[in-house]
Image 1 (cartoon, rainbow, N blue to C red):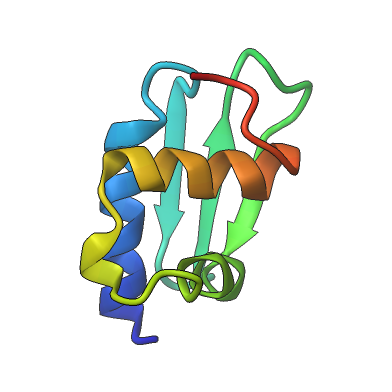
Image 2 (cartoon, rainbow, N blue to C red; image 1 turned 90 degrees about the vertical axis):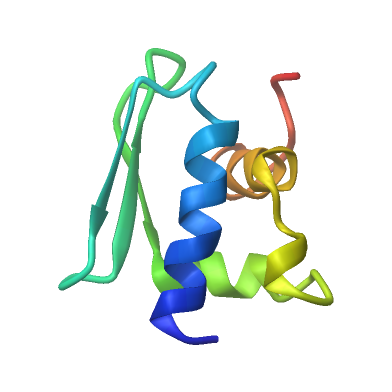
Length: 84
C-alpha cells in the first residue's frame, strides 16, 4: 500500500474518530499517526505500516469510509471497538 493510500485511509479515519478523539496528528516524515483523546492516559502513535496492515483487511482502500475508519482506529488503539 502506498503512502498516498495510507493518507487517504487516515483522512477517512479523521472524520470517523472526531467524536472521541480531540487531536490526531500526521507526521509524514516519521510515517506516524498520533491519536490524542481524553479517554486515554497518553497519546497513541500508530505507524503507517500498522494502519496499512489493518486497512489490508478491506478489498479496496476506497471502501474505507469514516465509519470503517473509526472501527480501524479504535481497533488499533483499544484492541476493540469501544465507542459507537
